[in-house]
Picture 1 (tube, one colour):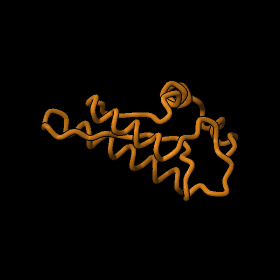
Picture 2 (cartoon, rainbow, N blue to C red):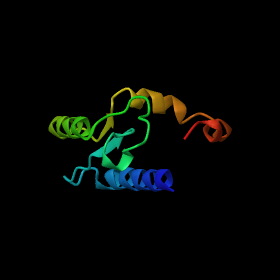
Picture 3 (cartoon, rainbow, N blue to C red):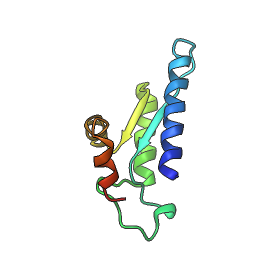
Length: 96
């Protein structure tokens, strides 16, 4: 459910950013991976985990640069560019 909610919000924010293009309003879409914090306490960190401070620093840098999206950590961007083409059968077999 959590992943579905995140995906839905991501899709909504992407569409909203597209509809606001040219209006002077900017939307920054922050796409963090596994964030080590209170919510994930007791869980084993996933590969390429980040901390809330790392997410905050990347967000500030992206806002200053006028970016529309930021991946934290940066390595997630090319990984998910490739993984979005993976068949659903493969996604179902991946560990959660």
